[in-house]
Image 1 (cartoon, one colour):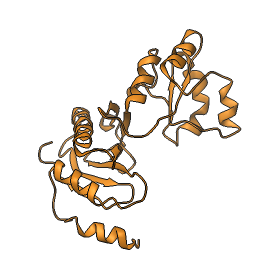
Image 2 (cartoon, rainbow, N blue to C red):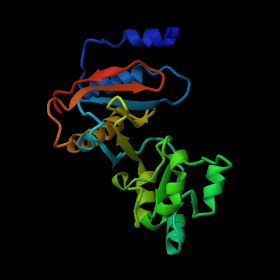
Image 3 (cartoon, one colour):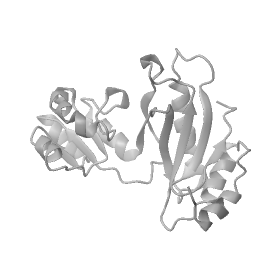
Image 4 (tube, rainbow, N blue to C red):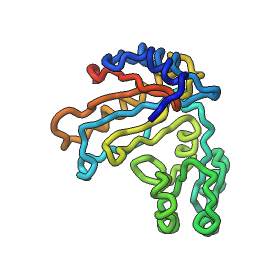
Amino acid sequence: MKHGKKYSDAAKLVDRTVQYDTAEAIALVKKTATAKFDETVEVHIRTGCDGRHAEQQIRGAVVLPNGTGKTVRVLVFAKGDKLSEAEAAGADYVGGEELIPKIQNDGWLDFDVVVATPDMMGVVGRLGKVLGPKGLMPNPKAGTVTMDVTKAVNDIKAGKIEYRLDKANIIHVPVGKVSFDETKLQENFDALMEAIVKAKPAALKGQYLRSITLATTMGPGVKVSTAKY
């Protein structure tokens, strides 16, 4: 893949053979962000897990203390009192069965996170083929299947992110924007890593965290030392 001059110049600032400590890595990532928009800062964690085994799966959520810098649109599936509760909490869209054809037939997907009360999962389950591949299916482990819709919506709006293994056993998550100061990015990174370390599967033998890389949307990757984890 051929990269432009800006990327190549930015990449020269990064020593690919070095695992930087977190503070240095964050400073470098901010320095190497050259795009004209406010890039997202992402963390890519390569694990020693084998996600084909259920007992080595990793999935959960963590609220980043300083948010992600992104406005998240929340859709809540509920009924009865829970509809008004979700609206009061600040959900962008609230509804029930009537939303199914809109999503299934009209391709409506103007939302980033879906929350559902447990009694609505039978209805939401019919959207599995649409929401599943996009990673939008509500899940109890991520706190998005719950009766406490107020807490779910508040947490998501405050900067809650989901983490899970992809097919290559890597976790990809945002930890903020380039415009965040280094302290805020560090706090978000630390909160994420604490959750990931706690999520280590008991069944895993061998090294858990193989590599940690910080990068912006358009910038080069910066390796972070795994030593302290």
